[in-house]
Amino acid sequence: MKVLSVSSEVFPLIKTGGLADVAGALPIALKSFGVETKT
Image 1 (cartoon, rainbow, N blue to C red):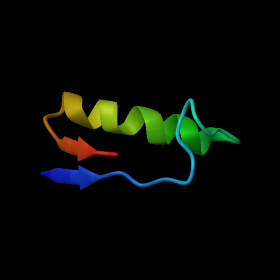
Image 2: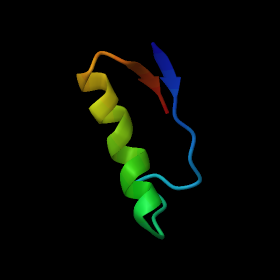
Image 3: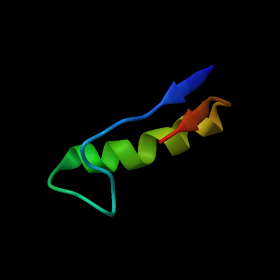
Image 4: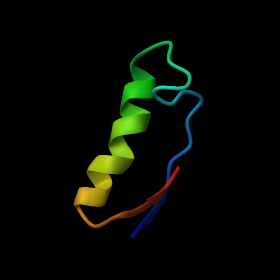
């Protein structure tokens, strides 16, 4: 499976809330399950 991650925030560059934390951590977590990700 291939996943493209797009977000208006990404840790540590632009962070105003929890979205940046999730946008930064989710691709890493998905890779541990063998999912190919691009950000």
